[in-house]
Amino acid sequence: MIKIIIIALSALYLPCLMALEPLDEEELQQVLGQGGVYLSGDITINEAGGPLNIETDPSNPGVWKDSCISTSTNTRCGARIAVNAGDGDSSGWLVLDNIRGRFSFEGMTLATRTINSGFDNNFDSTNTDHDPNDAEYTKDGVAFNRDVLEIGLPYTIKYSNVSFTLANSNFARPTDKEVNSQGQVIAEFAQTDILSVKIDGDVSLRGNLLLFPTGNP
Amino acid sequence: MEYLEAERDILIRILEVASMKIFFQKLKARLIGTWFLILCSNFSYSDLEALTDTHLSDIDGAGIGIVLEDFVFNAGETVNGGGTFEINGLKTSGGDDVTIGISQFYIAGPGSVQGADATDHPVNIGRLVNPFNLELRDGNDVGVTDKAVFEFSAPTKIKGSRLSERPNTGIRFDLDIAGTRYQSLENHIKSLSIDGSYARLWGGNGHVEGEFALNINTPEIQFFACDSLGNNCGDTVNFRDVNIELQLGFGEYQSVTFEVDDTGNFIFEVGTLEGKCSSLNDTGGCNSGVAAQDYKDLAKYYQSGPQSNVYVDKVIVGGQDFGSTTVSNLQIQYLEVKSHDLQ
Image (cartoon, rainbow over all chains, first blue to last red; front, side, top):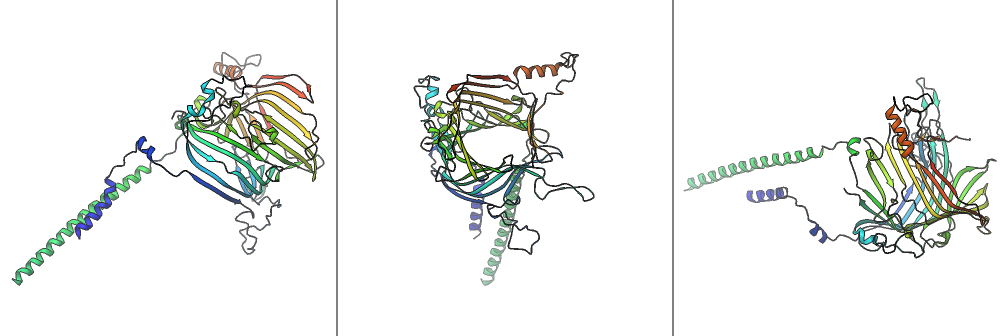
């Protein structure tokens, strides 16, 4: 019995004693993974104003209650990103406000790929800028000969009532204000909207985004 | 005999207990050893420290290359089955709301016929051997002392984008004033290259500073207006062989800042040269003797600092050639743009 326990326990410790060895390039080349990942997504942002907007709970004073339908102009509806790019007390905020709506896409892919051909110059005989026989200009794929991370763009992205507003404001949040030591309000929240964008429909986004390391690390 | 057997049983039990004791002692020693190992390995992980700017500024060379292959972007109210694509927030002088409805915004390859056939003409943007690049650079190489500089750059001009890697892009938009659609304006850019452009950003004293270069090279930019249905288009304003090189900022010496003031208005500033010289001579110039280093820095700025050039080979309006336009060696020594709220 004791022997069995000792063997079982030592078996538990064994992996700790075994050294991890690096796989060399040739062995790694034999590893075959999945061909890639296929992604589809559907994101809805602040369609009803945000998590703190609970219209159905009038007893809770901590939440605010407002209708945030798509035509609402209430500044508290929608998500808000405020960035302070300045310094000191007299600086304000760059704001992306009223971010809301639904984005959905299907068919985004994620894969690795070796590029060692293609990417030739589609030489146009009317273009006299470059010598067509110059190998550097004609065969980029052969010269590159490396692996890349390929993100296949989703062909079509559907937007439903997506909107956002580009703005500047003096405080980060609409509820902020500056109060002096006597409790008097010195400065109220102020925001200048520059423009608003509204998208409802399909956008074609086709092709592959290729990412790879550059330089000589 | 029975007595002997009983004695043997006791002996065996004593031995068993002793061996159990030894086993548990060994087990204890092992467990202590294992815990020690785990603790040690934990300590080795707890050694992460923040990199200082000086350390970061030593990082060199490696970045992320970005290339778009067979790329098409096509959006708008008259493509992909319609929809809404609007920009709001503008007003006429009479206070009416102006809505810019974007009929089409496209980025596609050669042969896209002003966006009419965008989706069948993909384009590669960036070259594999000369891609768009995201990089953290050593500030000492780009005029920012001992700081890391974030850089996003377009392909370089040497071995720059080839003809098949230069997209056609354009925008068609309508003006709606107080709900009535008035006019449709179109802008198309052929075979656009922005080779040599870059944006560099670094941390100043609590704010973001930057330096920017924008190069635009295109054989043709067109503007024309049509009626509200996009027909009966008027004369075209053509800019042929347009080369624009804009440079804003010069490292730390003249940094570009974008801030918002405490009233919620933005301020875009290209740093001033005022105060760069500690001693002025009788004529108001920089004293090359007393302020020798300041004089040297200023001379370097004037000789090899940022320059902007614009060259348009031909401006043609409605078929009439207006000739060429050249602006060269424009140096912006101070610029402040500030927004003011009209409401």
